[in-house]
Each structure stands twice: as C-alpha cells, then as structure tokens.
Length: 123
Image 1 (tube, rainbow, N blue to C red):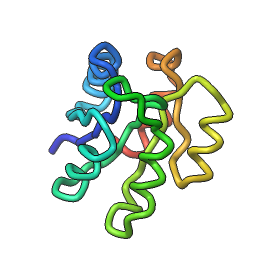
Image 2: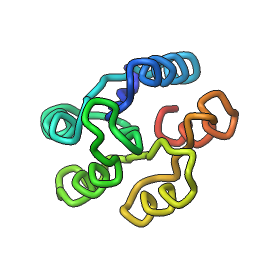
Image 3: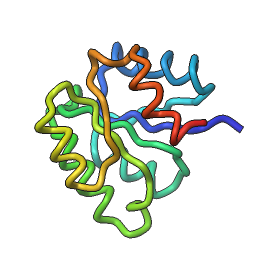
Image 4: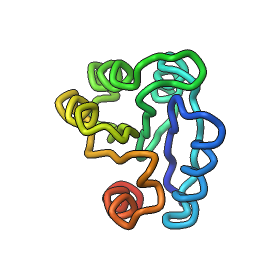
C-alpha cells in the first residue's frame, strides 16, 4: 500500500515537484489542501503518513506555522508527522518548536538530504 502525503498551501508548480519527488523515491501518493481548514478537515477524516506545509500558502497567504500549531494542538492529530517547506532557518526552528519534524526548503527538493529526511516517514 502506498504512503499518503498531504501537501498544504503549495502552489501548483511546487505541488507537482513534491508529487514527482515523493512518487519517484517512495511511490507515495500526494494529496493537496489549499489552506489550514481544508487540511484539518482532511486530517480529521483521512489517514496520512506525512503532512508537508508551505511557509506561506499560495491560495490565501496564510502562514504554515499557524497550520502546524493547529494540527499539533488537536490531540487526535498531534502524532501525525508534519514538515515545513521553507528555505529560511528561523522558520524551520519555529516549526520544530511547534512540534514539526525537520523540514527542507524549496531549493532542496532534489537533494539527497531531503530524500533521506523523508525516508523515516515514507519507507
């Protein structure tokens, strides 16, 4: 059975890059959610192995860190692994403090380090 990933707040281009990366390396299926409420709704009704959240949502400008905090605040969702996509170390640190797993930036989509960081959740 394929692993399931929820991509939150990514533009079509980056969602496609993420889908290719995860499909190629892990045979994972990537589903999308445009904003926090859509992500929470899906997480409450479906099982995902990993949630990957963009720092600033393409559709409405919401902040991914807020989405991470809301996911981690719900007892039934808190154990779900979440990663932030951001090139900025300070936002990665904030995401870790909020309970996220170490994430990576858009400039690292194709790097072996990113693939290795995903392996823990998708192998």
